[in-house]
Structure formats: structure tokens, C-alpha cells
Image 1 (cartoon, rainbow, N blue to C red):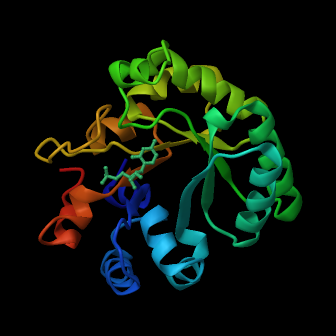
Image 2 (image 1 turned 90 degrees about the vertical axis):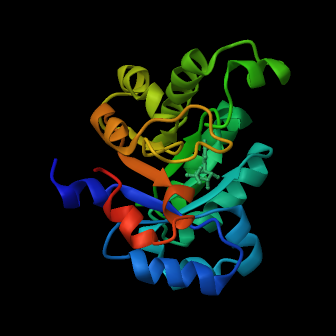
Image 3 (image 1 turned 30 degrees about the vertical axis):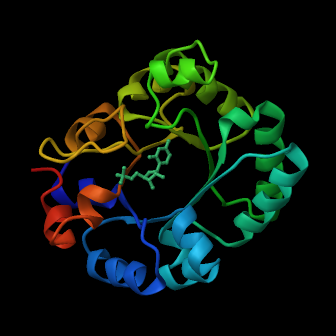
Length: 229
Ligand code: C5P
């Protein structure tokens, strides 16, 4: 895979508090990465307008909807109308919730892509045990991914470490979006199930979500350029 193909799979997590900071990063990085992720912090501080300003077709709207099926179906209809590259719901909301979300979103916009968060990459077996879940991420993620596929979702968010098993369960055309990406020299922070950018691409990720290793760097453009070195 050549340089530009690899970089086109990178979505930069714009986990910043202001519109100005987000638009500056998007402006500086737009020729170096495939798109941007708008998460809870930016969305709560700026509202849906920020998606319009960044450009919906290159935005992953990461709000992880998790509520009763009727509520998630309603918000999925609204998200589908925004025309984003991707948006997501939480798989732990269950099959009925995911299925209601997929049906509502596709009826609104047949081209929308909706994915499910399996197990956050900040969890490991120990932290799952503390919330009463006895299954390891290694077993839970492929199981939830299969459920997401059966519910009509287009892909899942998972750790790059789980890609092989998810591909076995869900096939090659299922989108696998992987946060928890850390170049070998970067701080791991609160993430637990991490891989390097090159490892994640080799494993078969469709998109890599990279936040702090780029946005926290002194020079974000240089950090993005060096990602696969
Ligand atoms: O800074 P960092 O590279 O850890 O950012 C990862 C981003 O991906 C964050 O915005 C986080 O909310 C998001 N994310 C995640 N794990 C998931 C789903 C989303 O880390 N399972």
C-alpha cells in the first residue's frame, strides 16, 4: 500500500473544545488525512453546524447513540439526514436498538453508513469484570460485531487487535474502524488495546481513528505525515 492510500484511511479525532481550534486543525490537515471525527466534546460545544463546516462527507459523527430503540431510531434518522461519512450507535444497546437504528437511518438516507461501537478500546478484561461483564474483549468484540451485522449495520468500531476475528465473523465488506492507534513512540494515555498505524492497516482496518498522537503534537501536520514511518 502506498503513502497516500494509507493516509486516506486516517480519520483525525477532533477532540478539541472550540470551533476555531477544530477548523484550524481540519484546514491544516485536510491534504494529509482522509477525514475527521467529531465526538462528544466538539459536538456539545458547537452543535451540528460544525459538521457542515468541516464537510459532512468527510466526517465521522462519533456520538455513540445508546438508548431505547425508539429514541435511537429517531436520532439515527436525524444523523442520516446530515449526510456524514459515518455515524455510530453503541452495540451494548442490543440487537433491537441497532436494528431500529439501521432501518430508520437507511429509510431516511439509503447511502448513509452506520456502525456500532463494540467494546471501547479503553477497556481490558479487568475493567470489564469490574462492570460485571465476564467475557474478554477478544471474545465479546467478534460476537457483538456479528450481532451488529445481523441487525443491518455497515460495520463496527473495534481495536485493531480484534480485526482478524471480526473479519472471520463478518466478512471482507464489513467496515472496521479502529481507534486506539499509537505510533511506537507515542503515549498510550487512557487507551488499553492499542496497535501502531502500520500494524492496524496490515491487519485490515478500513479506517484508523487517530486523536492525540496528531492533535497533541507540536506540529500536527508533521505527526500525520510521519504516522506510517
Ligand atoms: O486520542 P485518541 O487517539 O485516543 O482518540 C481516540 C478517539 O476515538 C477518541 O475520540 C475516542 O472517543 C474514540 N473512540 C475510542 N474507542 C472507541 C470508540 C471511539 O477511543 N471504541
